[in-house]
Image 1 (cartoon, rainbow, N blue to C red):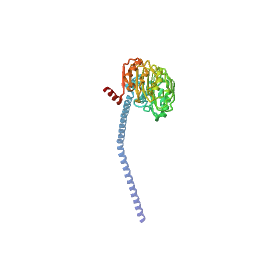
Image 2 (tube, rainbow, N blue to C red; image 1 turned 45 degrees about the vertical axis):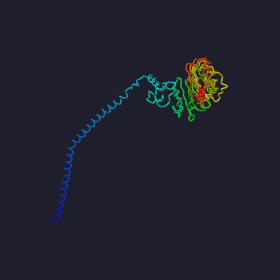
Image 3 (cartoon, one colour; image 1 turned 90 degrees about the vertical axis):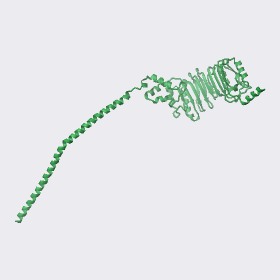
Image 4 (cartoon, one colour; image 1 turned 90 degrees about the horizontal axis):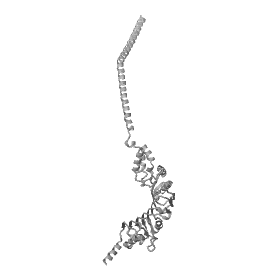
Length: 384
């Protein structure tokens, strides 16, 4: 009986447990079905939202593509625009470049705002035009204020751009640039057959000689503070020379063909042999020292039959009594002199000079100031 009761209770417990599990499973299935039902109701909305986003993205992409196309068109317009100056023929631009520089034979600086080099920095087309315009590079300043002395080899490139054009070479240098100056002058001498105008103001250094044929040279201007190099040239076109503070014994020029000569800071006895050879001079200027001038033994007469303009300048404030009368200048028209060259008697000295030369002066300028002692002497003479 007891066993039957226990079996009945055990069966009842199992049934309860089984029923409980069934209810739990049913509840779980109900919840899952509920979630699935809810998701199935939201899914169409999600899909619709995703489709809407894709449509909006597509619209934005289309708008962005339109903007990219518009941007490309805007960028292409300036590239196709032709600036007026760039439409000019190269020959016209080249002529404008030439007029940008100082008038030849003035030498512009090689670098800086007023140099031909600045024209090569604007654009590629201008650089090509400038490099192929020889006349832009015919005036060359080798001075330190107009040239990069750190790179003397640059001169060879510049001289090469000048082609066959006559050259105007200018150099004014001092001792601190001696090393570079030597290289520059050496490079310039290699093109001496193109020299038309030469100006060298340099300090002493081991400068190479200037010799040989200079077929185009018309004007030479030399100043050497110290012993000059040997200068012995054949220059059939040379007409004008300026020689300052230079040992004339080292200089051999075709004196007889010169029409203009300036001798500056030299002694009268040194000038005389040169002047005697320069018989075709039309213009002459003498700036003289007088440390060795002997009034009682003046230099020999100098006859210049073609001379029309003569200038005397006294730099040392010494006396040159009678020096002006050593000149015989029958064609003279213009005379400019400091008063010291007419001493001791300016009126008689001038009259004697004109009578000896037989010239007809049209212009006379006497410069300088008489000393206080001479003025006092004139006052005393007048009072007597």
